[in-house]
Length: 274
Image (cartoon, rainbow, N blue to C red; front, side, top):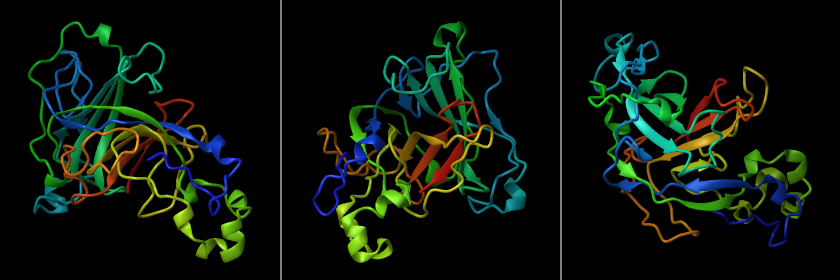
């Protein structure tokens, strides 16, 4: 996870300027309540506040249903992830908030070909009358099913993939000069592993970074959260790895990455499935 790339074994002087902190969440099945940080458990939600609902406008055919059968079908969002500031102070909480709630519409959507996402930043102390009987979606694509999990976090540093490094810096490296960048030995630049995590860098697999500029202010969006189907071995801790992370996602592999504006997390986010 935190393996530092080298230039054919030599240190890369400017690379430390690109390091990002990451929190690997290591979700595992367990009891989760509305006052806990968790995946797939009940949210701390005010009784009189409308529950997030997808209008179905972006639904694609799934579950053996056609586009016509699912488009425009309103459905409540599923409770996805809840993260409290006291557990994860690394999150960019807006002033006056201390809980991040991530809701998902567990059907395929246009654009990113995965579930839609809503982010809610709130102050836990303002929820004085919580909703106990919480809505659940009627239709759930099996690829996006998940079960209640608790977190066993560890913290580390993460280095970018080659595609996130400016080309002018890569061209200075000896392995790129020797072989030409397009044919360079990428074994000297380790790939990021699969992990459910806060922060860090995006594990680009099916594509290179694109559409990263915030449409509201022009800042380059950064990774807030990744929800992965599997966990690769973690060098920073001895948490279990493998199949049991609570998701069957993208046909059993891949991750849903949520990228946000570093200037204002309430600006337009980007969803990327890799």
